[in-house]
Image 1: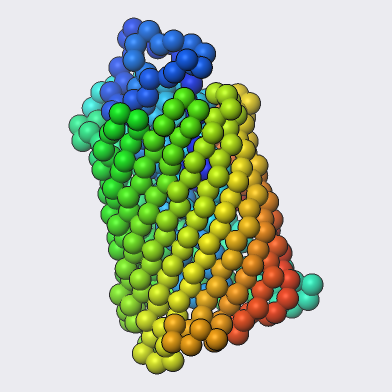
Image 2: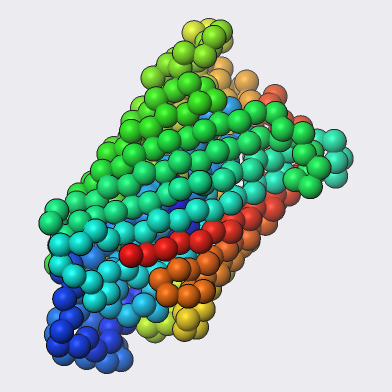
Amino acid sequence: MMLTLAAFPVIAEETIEQPESYTGNYQSYFQDETDTKVTNASPAQKEKEPLPLSAASSPVAVDKTAKVNTKNEMDNPEDVSLLRLRQEDPPVHWNSIGRNMEVGGLHGNIGTQIEIDDVRWSDNKKNSGKFKLATIQAFLRHDELPNWYFGFWNAREDSYQGQFSNQDYKGTNTINEFFVGHIFETWRGNIGTEVMAGSETATKRWKSRFKVWQDLRLTNKWSLAGYAYGEYQPQGNEPGNGDLNQYIFEIEPAIQYRINPDLGLYLRPYYYYNRQERESWGDIVEQEWKVTAGLWRNWYPLLTSLYLGFGQDKIDNASNAKEVFYDGRYKFIGGTISYPVFGEVRLYGEFKAQFTKEAGLWTTAGHSWNPFTVVGVNYNF
């Protein structure tokens, strides 16, 4: 699920003075340290809530989707606090919700986004890509259920051959996911657990996932965030489907250094493992690792970030390591932007350029480049 808010796991808090009549009722707090610009008249109150993110693209027929981001509910609408909980979705959105709301209400965010993941070669006949429309994505909570949240995500994913401007569509996948999570407050932030149930039409598979995540402020300069999850997909009922169960594991810790309340640096390593059982020819195993480094800046009200990184995605036969289906070594650079167009409605976007050296039985050997674009809108209430 989205929102890419995207997605870096950064924490940088700045508080402003609240009126005496402030009625917010939120659970997770940070007391700003000596670098805080303004001292609150009352304790600063902040709550972490998950947000959805877009799905990852994969060279395999297995769609790697995992959506959920955690965000702070902030007194200052321009504060930046991000916990990115999905690998291929760098954060593209910063926001706050629930300021000056009545106790006992329903709060959250709801939005939609378009994602274009294009793969281009020097030979245009080899071009391909994926167009994804997240028709609705939302994460909600109610003040009468402290520290609980729930959400849902629906998206349509169309794979195509050729360039996006002249495509020949080859397949459609509809993804539905539902989330329930609980937040455990600590003296330095939040630790959360979450379960997800969902389905995908392309493979006619059900899926379930258990996730743990954290968003901790270690000092007034250093913060630690990240997540780990395990996912299980039982055998699909597609006719002639020789694929059995799938077991997926993903982890992404992140550490951030806040230079000042409006500027921060972060480093985010990532690892993904997917074992797909097959009736014959041996199981398929995919492993991917990636390291991302970036910088975010709050310009008030414009929010931006820049990032770069490198990694490798490899798919082979579990019983014959010499049989390599895909081996892609890549480098990438990208940026995000977010702006409140009016009220609690925020427009966001992201662009990433990835350059890959590919080899293997499932791809064309050589170099490709991948322009990745996201445009979306989110409403907080």
